[in-house]
Image (tube, rainbow, N blue to C red; front, side, top):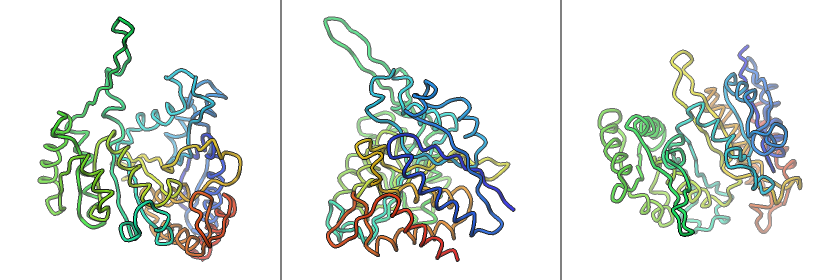
Length: 371
């Protein structure tokens, strides 16, 4: 019997509701996957942790995360905590998890299910069949560089500084991760940066070229300015397969790509660390792309698909359970083909359901596919 340890961090807002539907799928996996079981622990992160402990994540919760084989996070934040000190804001818990476990590669798929092509803001022919993977560097760059400060420069004026810092090694490992993914897909990597105006962009370009030459000459490489990449994602998104980019541009480009699929509520993500030579596995955290949506929290109408799909990514990338991941993804597609929709993806002629009913419908399909 193989036991995998999962730490579930529901977080804030709709995080608790959507995580309940993940647990429904985990129960089915435990019942259907003979020889493999998932041991689940829970803890607080974000605003809920601030309310209970005064910090966005406790040392005890970090210890649980360190002992887990994978972490699944719901969402953090909300207006309730707008006035807490910057250092303990809800997002600080998420950033600590990423930084302490060196989760440097953020995998953000943008997949347009055929049943939702009409829900995209782009024309059907541009997005139907869309399948892009954005690999965003997650632990360095503008969000972590120092100095990061707002200073008083006199005469009623202030000066804000955010520093973008990258090293060769930090870029190299992201490009290698992107090339590894591309080899399992369409064998093409596009690297987006701003080498025309930013020194960090020059380093990204130069390290990418050198890494590609030494590590993955078999993979097709395209260098693209980040602003042009944003434009091309709208003009012809299916020209891309894997896009590798830095922390700041990755944040923007991945949200842009996400909206092509019809709803942020549809998309999962994975944050992966370096492979441990002893186990052959990476430290990993999985979470939906969407936020805590406090405006609909507690109403039972949130879309759980992105979080369920994040579990599928965990099965694929942390546990080598591709068959079970395929079953979950196929179950999601089947439920959408059957016309079930939560409010965020509602279409004419479809059947509107809430969080629980959508979760139950997907769970039923998963159970049937694993029978």
